[in-house]
Image 1 (cartoon, rainbow, N blue to C red):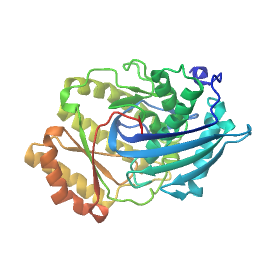
Image 2: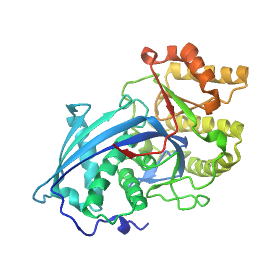
Image 3: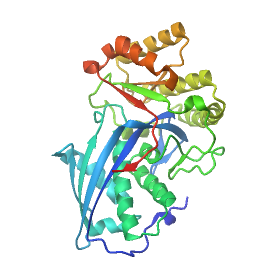
Length: 359
């Protein structure tokens, strides 16, 4: 692994004050990664749809100061100071200061807000940390104007990964691979890359309705969950299976075999939860309503010859995936039959997006 290319080596412009705002999306993995080694290196490659409406908007105000030994920042989440979020962000800044030494020269004020409930099984760390990374890269671009856009996105993904592995997949879109895989050109454990192969039209503008089955805090954090894979009895088989599944998914995405897509995506979701069920300590992150929703989706698919399917992240919420031409029918199905299983009947209509954008 060569990480030296990401070390900011010179300062061409002195920037006294600056402010940048980025909107970066969450993502939903089709082939999951579960298990990692330091520093945030995945045990298997993964691929995700980048989302559009589930996003974080982050503004960072930078003010030049005397260089210090630790990063100086204030953090506001949805208008309120959040002391409980600061340790994770402070750890993130410690991990990246080797690559972004200029952050020690600034006081930062971070304002962040989500378009979805925090810690509810939608990857808020993915969108949140990728947004911070993009703001930092905007400052780095101003300090060093010769940086190319391709490098900026690559380094932003690299930095975001050091805070949250899945955040590496939230810089670009619509499909992003993270993790070295022999059949994905340019793939790396260090950053996410856009899926480099031609994608069949059936998967263009794919739809995702996120059913908010449980908006509460997750029973187990992703970090704890990943660590449980270290001594997991099925870990090595799972890592092998995931890489094999990514090979299959690459073929499916090019060829348009939607029935195979459905089978693989649902299998991956259930395998992720099987890893938690069989770890020690063990966890059940699905709720009774999660299982009811899955059964309803299966029934609807069979009765209507539909291509609807589900996937899950490490939580109770259900992502309902389907091609765009089924949008009207599936929206009606969700409203009439699935919303009742959501907290306060709440769900989010989303679709595949293109990644981070400055606003």
